[in-house]
Image (spheres, rainbow, N blue to C red):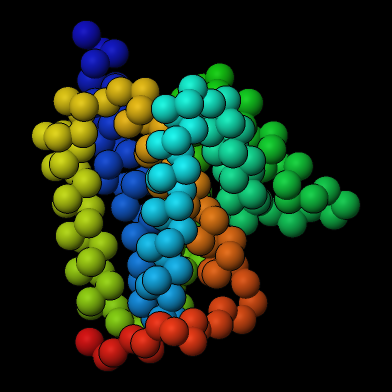
Length: 193
């Protein structure tokens, strides 16, 4: 009887704490006039994953997901003399595969708070609006996960969710973690809200 309760808690952690943190990509894209870019990255990842899944190339999806995760998690690693942060983040992957609760603990207590900390400068200028977006997105995911997503979880759905994570990482590495994010010339600058 304990197992279903534990599984339900883990699912709730994903839908209310872990998944919503990706919405900061939209906040950043809005702040820097990169909405077209964020849409292109997410659409490309989802469409590419669709074709890989349909073609039965799931190992490619999984490999890209793992490599992107290693790159993404390196931002949470401490600086240790003569040890690249990629080595530290790579060492997490087998541990997460063996022990899911360790992964959830890492995401809840290290990655997500660090993510908000690193992205604060994109959240703070329009704080009320951005917190409203985050709250609405969290509610949508929390209830949507319980009502809709749970009923339709398939291997295809899981691969598409991986593509959303991959897109989140690609956007962050391409635009957020750059020292000087540039506005797109063809995109309009954001309007004050």
